[in-house]
Image 1 (tube, rainbow, N blue to C red):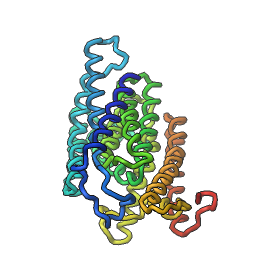
Image 2: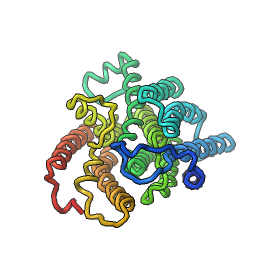
Image 3: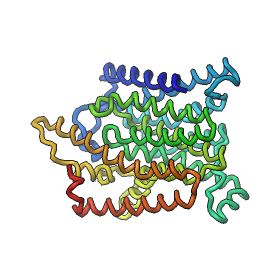
Image 4: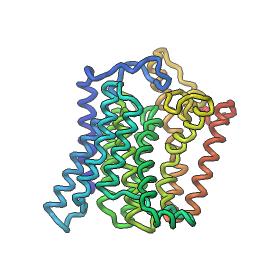
Length: 367
């Protein structure tokens, strides 16, 4: 498992470096008027390609190892891993197409992530069998198609949730690493080595990408990278709950409550203003942290100043994520406690958002 992670890290590191070195012709100009743009210059947005190659090659190596060594292989990566790789491709390739052309509409990207969800349900049998809620679980047992619908919604939505929080150097990538490590920890406790191997190699590949992304901002994950994180984590979360009855379905929900609630709140906020939920703006939580908490950076070079402020923003959100990940890992089988922490996070998020909007941020946070 260690060698698989090292392989994924090195492939992502090398491919990322090659992308930075030779991708000048692939740098599609990202409009200066874009509200979500917080950098200077045209940085390559195809870091997702390095991640994809790292995962496909390392997972294929893991499958070959299992095939050659049989039951003695520690990885135990059976043929279903191949279906896993096949299922993620539509969403990821759609994201990469958008990164290269900026011409793939939101509707097409939603359709492609939906296709990935359908393939996951068909090829891997993904389903949400329970929610640990009285009455609801009986309904899911009566109509398995309801659980498939929930899985479809989760798989199609999470890639876009990661895309929303992918606004600053290292933000979405570090969140993905933290979540993958938490899921792998529980997988190993339950003896699910293959799933843990997929998650650990995803975390390792992301670490290889972050060498170029944080703090220098030389390479961005783009839609392709965000979709990889979202799809792999969504697939793994559902598989973990499906395979192990001890795992509460609210464990992955609490792990992912930050990107999920950011997406839900963003949709509500835009609808309340009478605009389309698909319209980009600069009012996400991480953008407000950048504008109203991170300050005190002074530099003659405006692009350097923006980069430094960009890098200072992400640690605030990493800490925000850890506030949910730590209780999730501690209470991964306790549904009532996990639900309570989910509710607490949502309330805390709204209170923090309103405090930042109203300039009521404690002075010790403004560093």
